[in-house]
Image 1 (cartoon, helix red, strand yellow):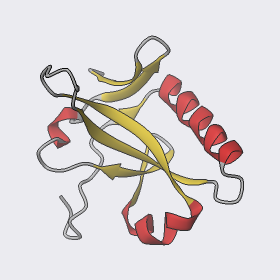
Image 2 (cartoon, helix red, strand yellow):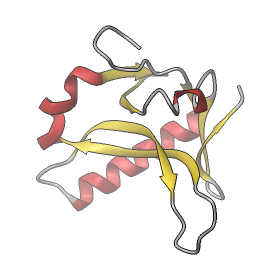
Image 3 (cartoon, one colour):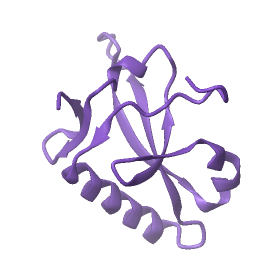
Length: 114
């Protein structure tokens, strides 16, 4: 963690994930043309099933929109050429440590060993 309290991104991004991130950006921009995507966000999400199954976690990719940019700009980092906000806590940062953010149609986004 830096002195500002922001966790440093500790992963890289594959070419496939970069393409998928740009596809999501285009979807955001088409859906909200007056408030388009400003910066990507990579986070660890917790899935809580309604059927009582155990909770699980997975990497989540989304965007902060232009209207939010001033509030989050201090946290922008660049990872493998992609400007992003790394949104996680110390509890989950090890899920990213030294790994590659990747994408496959059958899995969506996932973390893998380099």
